[in-house]
Image (tube, rainbow, N blue to C red; front, side, top):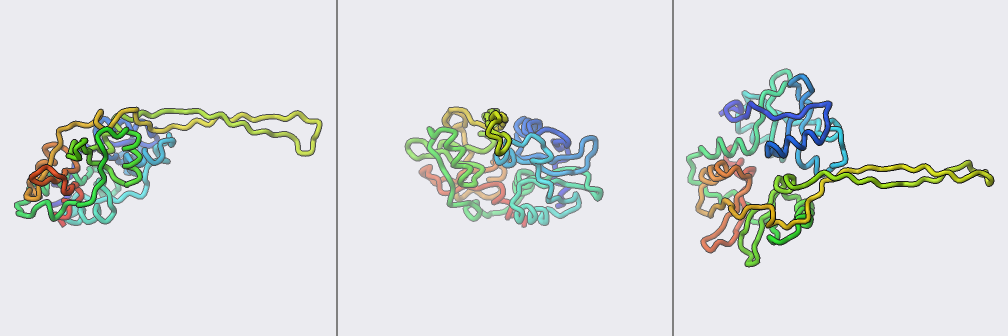
Length: 278
């Protein structure tokens, strides 16, 4: 199977020159983790921008300064197993597909590979061989601002959410946070005194500098206020193909694994299932 058999050809792109806010709006509108960036008026690939970039540097208004320029790419004729290796080694979730002139012709993502390839595997392998046993969880009534900081500190893109009985309530993703976050702007006044050195008769002068900063702010809500209680789960006996089909049907990147009593025993991410294609 080749990349051309899996890739998405109708690619949502950002353009340079352009503003960061425009790219963020596209990410939220189309519910994607990132976007290829092309040169305006062409298909030439210039970089890639992700949700992580906006969270890391929300003050940057120019997309050209926010995006990543050193992009890992693939071609339509590349074997899927080779594309999977590149994704896993680089620790990324999406890879632009380019032709010989570095023009964007498509994109392949971990979701594409799991939903379209792993879901077709006729294998008896169980998700228990691919799941992570360590994960980060928060209480359903945790303030969003606290949950957002926990996500940042843990390096996770998703958190499991527990109810008051420590049972699975749902899943909070970075996309959930971005959907409710607002780009706020604050201005700070800074006064700098200046005058002629040694001039005891001179008037003190002050230069007033106004520093404007933008940042993403989550509202004063709890985790339970913004997530759905309907969560897709798997068991230790679920095959990798069945799990991939569940992910595709619900369009999710992560599935909690539970036992017969409903206790959480692990999580399976789409990137974990990619190993089945190597």
